[in-house]
Image 1 (cartoon, rainbow, N blue to C red):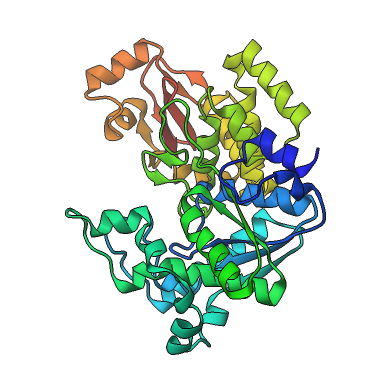
Image 2: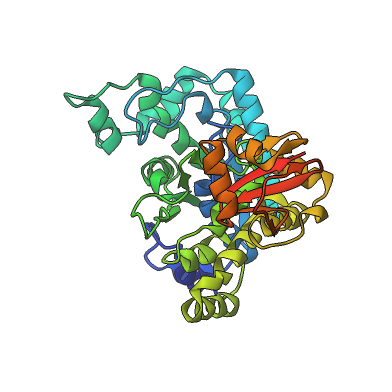
Length: 404
């Protein structure tokens, strides 16, 4: 499949300066894609755009992956109702390292060049920048941006000169990469379109050359109509310290039926035949959730590696699939203890149910027992008894207690 066809089939078509994207099927193009270090991890929103980048690389185009050490010192104001709090240099350095490590994981074994815009901005004199770059940026263009208008309006919070200049700083990234590496294309998420076309205009004015931008659409949860990637606890991060591997895997496993095939196209490298087969299985027997299982396995493997994926699948199978609790390793028990209530041994089932607030009283706990609602290590328990060994106590389908 040609790149233009791949992008169309997977849903990676949004705004672009190209009149015809079949140009992407031709000779290799040097392009760049950037993430600001506003945190020490990317989210799955960033991952969606990164997966589009992956297809450009796989089809022979040359990638420059940018960590925004300079732009991160200001913070992108687009979409923000008020001024960001500035990051310290130590925070930015830590965040850059986190983003760079995730680039290397998502693009493992792929050819790309890692760049940091702080490396060129740290040498630029302010007056020289105003004279050689700022002189060529019309104020009408910058004032016309939606976020500027909203911040300057009667009910807006205002905007500092620093945040107002963010778009110009990012635009110069394109200029620098064009001059130094022959980069003629920027890839970005839909929310970065305005910042990205600033670079296109700058290169036209400074160099008399035409360059291009290609953006991917925001992914929308079809069931809720809101931006995909949010959970009750906030954003879904690629860093396991922010979103555990277990929660990451469960997020994908619980993907909505309406959108799961689209998510497979965007977030995995499964080919058309494989995804079409999963689509047929979903339609014929949605209860098996084969598409969700394939999605969870593929994305978790990409982000966290095969070993951790196998482990979290095993834990999930013990919790929900009837696998033997005794087969969990010590590391898997450690992971599980971070996700569900945990208690020490040598108490009765009724005591555990009350202590962990699964039951409201002794009578309530005993009714759960006699009503066949409680299992210990997969076996129904109808009478109270003491638990002295590591065990998994479960009420119904989704209430657990790990006893260690």
